[in-house]
Image 1 (cartoon, rainbow, N blue to C red):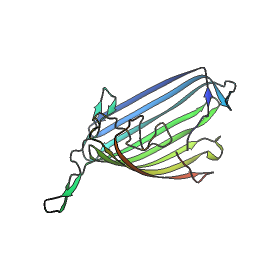
Image 2: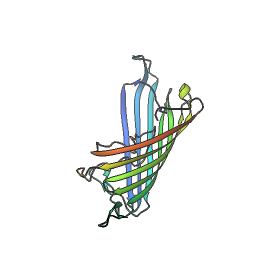
Image 3: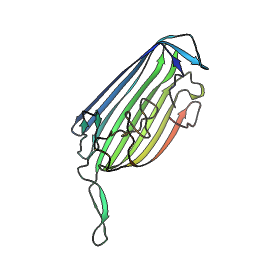
Image 4: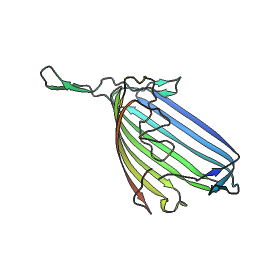
Length: 237
């Protein structure tokens, strides 16, 4: 359920991007704003630039908060501007003792989170739509190299001019597990805490901006349910 302005041409474009992150004990807060301003914006139809309709401002952002149920805290690398990997107070493990009996210990780190996304692509005759997205997540860090994440998201689009793909709600869930190679430096970007469908971020299942190729293995499963006035199914967010 995307928001889309179609192709637009203009004389000049400026971007404004700001990000805020804070850690206080078990709590982590992060927010970001992105605005795009274009002068003399004109729609492009069939590779032909139409008459200019004026200046436009598109904007979006997100805010998210996390809380560790097991007492851990996030670490932030000021030079990289990114969170480092999470180290549980007690690593989760299961194995066998000398007698072959199954044994284990530690519960890993458990974290809950909530996120809100907003994207506004309506301005001065261009009606790309408005997206609202909310996500609730549970993250289980078994050790510094492995985690599982479980997310539920709901997305609403307000795009009355989009025909069959007009207003509607999308509900979905996602679960993913990632094993990170020990060769990966501890200052790797720790994106991908929450699913963020359709708004200012992307998720191969991820939240918050960019990321990097992580050597290792990742497995994921997801499900979407669409509730719209005209459509009963969607191929993607």
